[in-house]
Image (tube, rainbow, N blue to C red):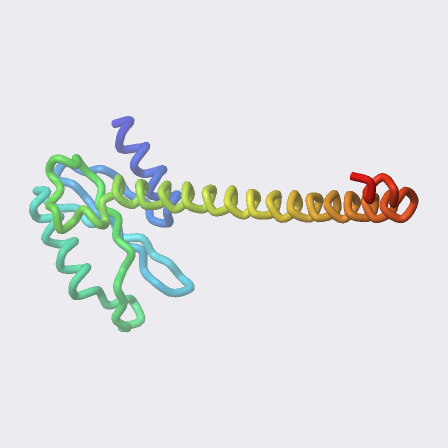
Length: 149
């Protein structure tokens, strides 16, 4: 029961709600400004997977009569989910989202590193320029120090 509530909370977080049924279930989120949620249940996991397969391939008709492809979230026991339904299985969707978030964090870290590198490069160029100015000053003030060596 706790797993079903966790699945539902995670599905809601990615935009679609779901509840784990006895035979498995999947939710459909209608496209458009007024999103309706539909809970699809069947007597067996195989039947739910067949519905998922058909909705992925053929889509649905909305209340306005227009055809659309719904966003699907398949929930249930991972051991009973058909391989064709795995792309819309809640665990798969969560892993993809976490992967995208981790990639976003990695991109942000890389951007920060590039900014720090550019800042350090600028400081190094300033130090080099300062050394060159002081070297030129010493050469002009005390040329014998450089010429006698």
